[in-house]
Length: 134
Image (cartoon, rainbow, N blue to C red; front, side):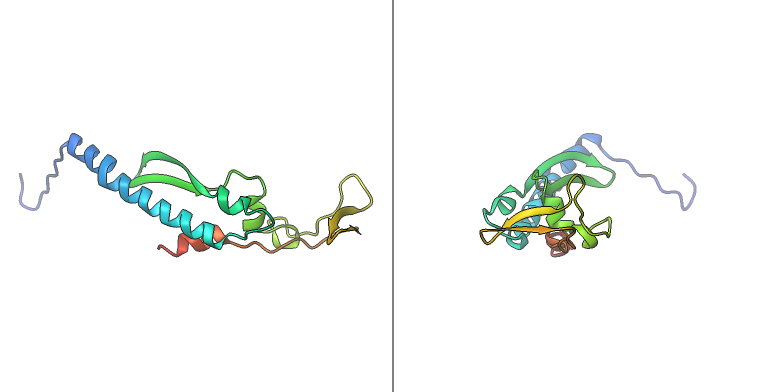
């Protein structure tokens, strides 16, 4: 070997044991902390279903430099609550009816009608939960 050359060798079995052992365990522990924080930050709403639905969705295995684990919710509306809707959401436009003259809903026991609504700002609880552990 010439002066200044570097040779690196590793045992593939030991490397896999490290990745599937302490690295995976650390990743799952971090996901649990993010899940706990996201549940604390998510709005309760009328039923608390969104908070309860936040979970570790999968641990897909090693990619690149480590394990990939997804924390989130399977509820359709979770994305809207987190990211916002209407003028606050990705389309940045008011919500309007598609097949009727008015939007209609019940609020405080009475029927409400509107030609459009501004939407709701996103709560960003998932981003906040992730940032808490960076």
